[in-house]
Length: 385
Ligand code: UDP
Image 1: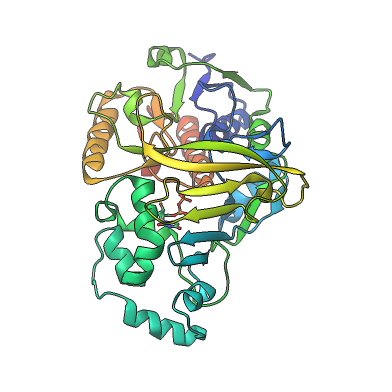
Image 2 (image 1 turned 120 degrees about the horizontal axis):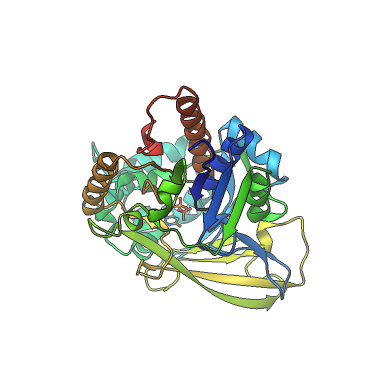
């Protein structure tokens, strides 16, 4: 028993951070991933034609208010300053996103000051005391015209359902600002790694106590060979979809190589329902410190996740939450030597910084329990601590 290793399933941020924290305490860890690269959906790779660093699974802009997480990521790579400013291409024209004073003044053809615009928007807002879904939240925040121009079509395309079926929390990710600040995020720290996310995750995993095996499928039959297993894959897959599939949206991409500057910005959202893609990303603009003659332009489409697709966004519709509860109850009753950690294993819409914060907190919790030699099986979820 004493010589057994720990197993981490999945080499994304969750798995890498846990592996590192255990390795630092002298424990031996094997990390496996079914893909042939580390970093999960944050994976970056230089395009062979343009030499542009491409975020292979869609744009990732690191942003956080968590000082510890910012310090942590800066140990493993150089974060270059980057402020995400998104452009929205809509039926009524081109606007700045998230909604700010420029967006509002241009959209309503006004010249309002910050205090005027607040009063102006209050008149537009629908009086909905407890917004229960995305649409109600949007109408309560923004009113009808802004909701339909910026959110209705995009959200239908992105999530494949009526915005009434979605939780209000999705809309709350985006701010509305009554000044000219067009930063997509409110976070204190924001940046993009100079050498990409994959280099950062490789550095986290680069420790004498960590072994990484890529292209390696996981089968839970191996669990008993390990002291403990940290599983970061999809929760429903772990239990062979016993209680049905959890709903996910996935995205797919269409790439094109062009000359020069294609769209003048890293991300342009296409808010109209009739345009089939949700956004276009031009990845060289994520690295403004680099220069490239050619450019790689990527159209992003969203669709329902089928068997062979990568799960991206947990839908968390009412039926999904019921299925989730069944898996959680079952997992807890199984008494297996497994912990479920991260975005896929806990079925949540988590940003990178939250994933790192939770993996750090969970490792600390786990190590404290292990050191105290309590009869800890770890058959719990990282979102429960
Ligand atoms: N959204 C929208 N129009 C936009 C941008 C966002 O309708 O131009 C909606 C959409 O439903 C999206 C949600 O707001 O899922 C949250 O946006 P965010 O940018 O946080 O999504 P992510 O970064 O996860 O793609």
